[in-house]
Image 1 (cartoon, rainbow, N blue to C red):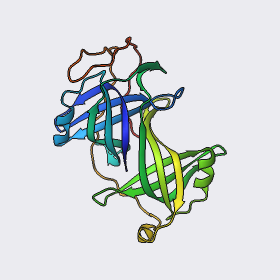
Image 2 (spheres, rainbow, N blue to C red):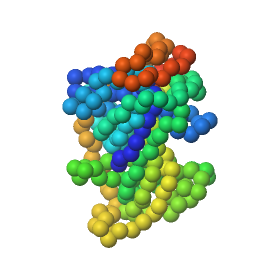
Image 3 (spheres, rainbow, N blue to C red):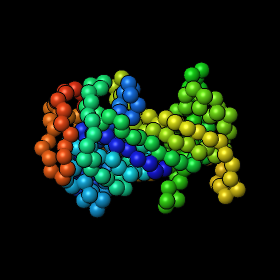
Image 4 (tube, rainbow, N blue to C red):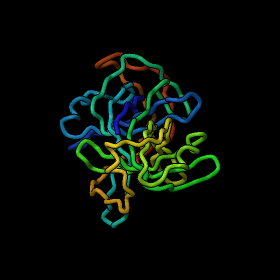
Amino acid sequence: MRGKVSGRVAKVERLDQVTVLTLVGEHEAGRAPHITSVRFPGRSAQQVADVATGDAVICDAQLVYRQWRTGQNEARSENTAVGLTCYLLSGGSVISTHGYLALQGAVCHYDLVAYVVRLEHDQADHCRVRVWTKDDQGERHFYSVTFTGSRAGAARTAQPGMIMHLNVTARKVKLERHWTDLVEARHVHLCMSRVHRAEAQPVLEERPAPMPAPALTPADAPVRMPRPKLAPRLTTGGVGGEWLAEAAD
């Protein structure tokens, strides 16, 4: 599924085959900021070659679900935003919130048409549904989507094989000992389509894709805002605090 994500660049990791930007943005006032790792693989890394910590960027991205096994045969998975294009913002407000420096008024949303696999979790105030969708190459990607409020009521009526049109946010959240992915529904519609009806069959098995995931290590030093390079940089007071790493479910 495709969408847009923006934020302040809090970490840049440049590897041989990929550049990873970690973005922090406040897309809802008063709520903990979204933390998103956007990967630019192969030649696409050239367009972020001059992006530095402290920049404000907005990215067109595709959300990809990946599964793999470690050398110890432990199952791992993550939702990864793969950057398609990256734009450097010439302005914007950086605020201190929940211990982070975040871009104020950022965006984080993706649209998809997905097929219901099963109801994973159900409580009075929320529920979680497993769904799958296909990318442009026909590969299946699986997501566990959390629904709250009135959206949870609509999601509970979904049966395996039904079609959902979703608009979601995807971000990293910290549990007690590790970071994990959280995909939350912003809008949901249950629908049917003759075009997609042949696809709407219950999924009995999920096949892992053997794709290794490079880890992001915590940054020890406080973030300092850089001087202008490509465009006017954001300026704000430095705020220290714990930093993050991608983590598996």
